[in-house]
Image (cartoon, helix red, strand yellow):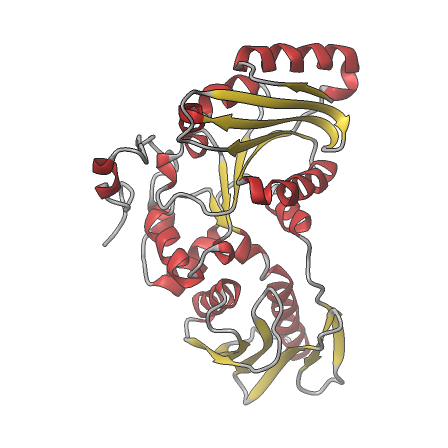
Length: 345
C-alpha cells in the first residue's frame, strides 16, 4: 500500500500504473470498476463489503470519501492498494476536501478501468436526484440503499420519482431469498397439479415501515395482479422486515413461508409435509456481490417499485442521465426540481 498525502489526481494515476507494472499480468483481468461513495463514518463497512465483492467479481475498487466540503482549500489524500487489504485486485481510497469533493469525477474518471463497465454504489444517503452527482452519470448501474434513510418509505418514493433503468436498491436485494422461496413453492404446487397456478391474494407479516417488506409486497402485487397487504408483527423481523408470507391460490389452496429465526424458514403447502429452507441474514458484501452479477436494467425491481409507490412508466424512461450541477453552498440550487426528465407525474 502506498499513501499519497495532499496529492493530485495525476499523481494517483501514475502511482497506480507503477504498481500495476510491478504486479504484472495477474492484475490485468478486471471485469468492471466499482465506485464506492461513503461517509467517513461508514467507510470501513463499505471497504469490507467492496473487498468481499471484489473476491467474487474481479474489479477495480475506487472509494470516494467526501470530507469537509467547506474546507478553505481543495486537498486529496489517497491510498493505492494492489493485492492487499481491499482484495486481490486494484483499489484506491480517496479522501477529498474542499471544493474538490464536489468534483470527484475529475479524479475518478482517469482511474476507471479501460473498456469495462462502471457500477457506482452509495453506502449512505444518496442524492435525491442522482444526476446531481456526476459519479452516477457515467455508471452503467447505480446502487443505493433506502433502508439507511431516516424515512425508508419516503426514500422509496424519491427513488421512484428519480428512477432511470440501471438503478437498483439493496433493500430490494435483501428480498431475494424470500422471492426465491416463494417462487419455488408456487412452482412446486404447479408441478403437483400439472398446470399453472393463479395467486388470488396474499399477506405479509412484518414491519410495514421496512423498505424490503414494502418492495416484496410490491413484487407480489405486480406478479399476481392483486394487492398484498403488510400486517405488523410484534416479533423481530430482521433486516428484511418480513416474518411470514401467505399466498391464497386458486382451487382453495394456500401456501405459507414463516421465518424460524434460526436462519431458516418453514414452508407449508397443501398435500405435502412441512419443509425447511435456508433464509439467512446476508452480510452487506453478499448483497453487493449479487448486484454486480448483472449490468442490465433490473425490470422486476422497477415493477416492484412501481407497485409500491404508484409511480408509473419507470421502465420506459431514458437510460442515460444528463449531469445536473448542484452546489450545496448555493441557495438557488436547493430549489431545483427533483423529478428527472421523462418522469410521469
